[in-house]
Image (cartoon, rainbow, N blue to C red; front, side):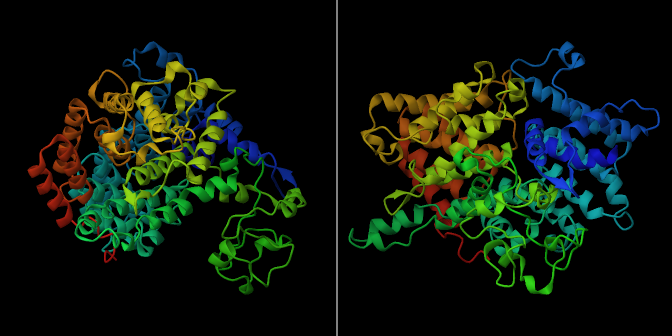
Length: 608
């Protein structure tokens, strides 16, 4: 039973039951040694039914009990309790599983599997206090045995994640560097360590270090092979946001004001690296999975590339699984054609991720197995959320030689919108499973899908989701722009009609309601994921509205940002723009000077 838990529970906590069902539908078209693959969902359900078996140890029974709560849709014991107003059943269900893991870790703090699953649940439900509780109850056990326990760096990295999520940033960073002088040397868990460092660096506004850790080559190689589900894309998205922090337009604006208009066009263009990050981390997944065209593949259209180093997968009659020295590097397999290959060998996508439908259509059924499904796995709800936040951040970032870096007409928004529609359609026959989706994911879907009412029933919607829908409509990203072909983001604030300004004000009020009213559900994610929507979007909408009440709320948001992230150039720049909109020019100039002194406008050159 524990083998099944170790294989399937991480998928359920990092995605949901609908995603597992989607993977199962692809596995039905694959086989292993001529035999069809079994259903992962059916295996998990059968195993969870053994949770009261006396032959199991107490630890194993707790694992199976948590798996049971991750799978069920109805549970009378949970219904009898009176949850806070607006708290969805999905949240209660996962929080119940999280509480079981907490009980497990209090008795078995050395359970690395339970530690990782509990921390993933704390992340997906936005429970920062629970993450800190998990880290602290396991801290002493792992520290006391740091010289003798196998896999100490794994436990230390997960504990650092919990400490950072709970606001103990200095302790988290010290633990990471105590585990190893160089975080990249943390064997088997450098991806988790990179996540912990990302939480620390973001909270303290250390943008330059963040770019080096998550966007540069030395940083990316730490987590690109992490075994978590599409984890590398999430961390690359974080690095892209930090690059935008450094590429604030304040320095360029000051330079342009001193130059003749005929010379401003020669100013170097910015934002191109962000689009490359987005394409590599997110858009490629939408392309190969078929989600970008609302045509998800029913089976893998590509075979898994052959690993470097002669790793054997088993059968010798499958030429794909017996690597030879002539096959070339992993990068040549992924992004190019190897001349020494034969027509029967496995091929990987070219740079444009084109799909050879004729080859795949004629491929024998036995050529596709589980490794192909998980190599070219479909996008998860978390992946689409991260993609939406990065693309929104780039859209709101500012101007690039007079035009937006990413406009509403950009094909990336079109692909992302199609991916959201494809994902949400997976819940059509299981409408109750929408309650399993985190509210931050539903909010992201509301931002991109203009007819969100058809995808998400009214009873699941919140004011924050309505505000996100208004924001997407105002920006023109929720549907094709209809304002005489003009992108709303390019219209000068002074020229906005009064009705549109009122819409921007509603965006501010609705989005902030997620945090202002404690009796209603907020946005269930950690601070690093809340910032693009609750700070950047709110301040942008407030400036568009030119309403004193909305601008005052934005000033409060910015004040919190500069207080908690004093070293962030982007926080000071955003604070400067809000103060300028309020008419406080002296304070605005001081905030602008602070932003420039922190490195705004440097783009990220020299950070490596």
